[in-house]
Amino acid sequence: MKYIPEPFKIKMVEPIRITTEQERREKIAQAHYNGFSLRAEDVYIDLQTDSGTGAMSDSQWAAMLRGDESYSGGRSYYQLLDNARDIFGYEWIQPVHQGRAAEKVLFPVLIEERGQFVISNTFFDTTRAHVALAGGHPIDCVCPEGLDSGLDAPFKGDMDLEALERHIDERGAENIAGIVMTITNNSVGGQPVSMANMKATAAIAKRHGLPVVIDAARFAENAFFIKEREAGYAEVSTRDITREFFSYADIFTMSAKKDAITNMGGLLGVREEGEHVPDVKSLVISGEGYVTYGGLSGRDLAALAVGLVEGLDEDYLRYRVGQVAYLAARLDEYGIPYQRPAGGHAVFVDAGRLLPHIPWHQYPGHALAVELYVEAGIRSCDIGSFLMDRDPETGEQQQAPLEFTRLAIPRRTYTQAHLDVIAEALGHIQARADQVKGYEIIWEPKVLRHFTAKLRPVD
Ligand code: F0G
Image (cartoon, rainbow, N blue to C red; front, side):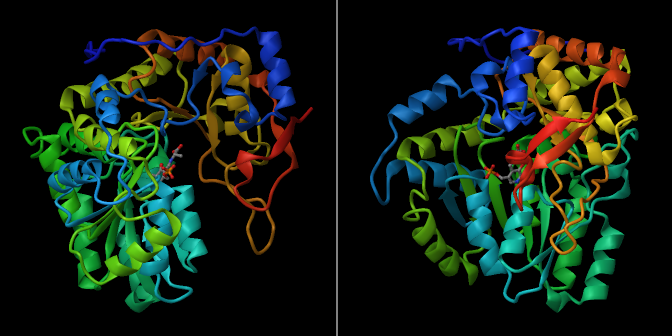
């Protein structure tokens, strides 16, 4: 594979503890076989999420020292406003404490009547939850390629346009509150959405008078994939690609903990300051704080203003997407199956195929995550049937379309040597795959069970 330069050097290090296999066996048993209950200091390489876990640059840290902590109208807010308006071309930009806060203030305003549908290329869990909490019904509508993990296709995150039209015709446009485009499409493997698909989705929405919302957590990685893979964009900058992509939508929500490379923060943007903004502002003031800080410190706003610009740097993005592709290429050496091609922020190992003897209701994606921790102290997580909550009406367990173990790579945090450890650890597990056991839940809460459930291995 071609050498990809890392466009930074390390100025400060954080020591991590090396544990023994025996210690890890004890720790994971004490945590009831749930990685969320481990202490982070007992983890060697933490791939649980790429959210808020990246390394900020010296420019971001320097900006933090100059953060303006005024209650209203602070300088840091205006810096963020200038940078965000310039990148996205939206009139109104609202900082919030993280992505789900933007969802929490948007969906009650967007969903005018209970029972309305909201259609997405695939909702992220919190977005799905906020649609439901606001009285709406979320519908996933990803293209069929997205659900075939062995298939190599450039834009597996795309909306299924035919299915979208069908849902609108069958349910009636008046019963639909809006359309959400998640970039990249996290739940199907960090897969990108093409410009053509965004444009076509927006055209359908416009024909039916429906608003389009971008869930923009990984907007910069998506722009880089468009530059690399979509005809006509090789010579267009990721900034201009972003500007065009966002021009097709009306609103965006964003977790800034991903592509804006901050440890905390989020944004809500509205292209034309129209009817929804006063209602959203009231919800922000009552839940997050005054509109010019939205639940963040001035220093967080300052780091976010800088991170938005750094996150679009093409040398950085080439390294970022290249690092994930490097890990995937190492897994190819062992023949370990994953959602192909590798996504922007993570490799989604297809645990259903790696551990075919474990039935879906014994959670192969979770079993592999536990095994990876025991093997090498690597924390990852299930994106499969363990993650799915029970059917709220019948109480039955629900089967996910695919059983993934997600290896999410924090930004600018781990070196290539760390990635080699991950690949080797998976190689060892593959060699004894038939001995890996499934899991059963011994306690679970009513919703979002994977965060706190207690499990035990099945003998
Ligand atoms: N939308 C997407 C696509 C996300 O991936 C996330 C978070 C959110 C919204 C919510 O943002 O965490 O800032 O409130 N994803 C993280 C993950 C948690 O691990 O994939 P948040």
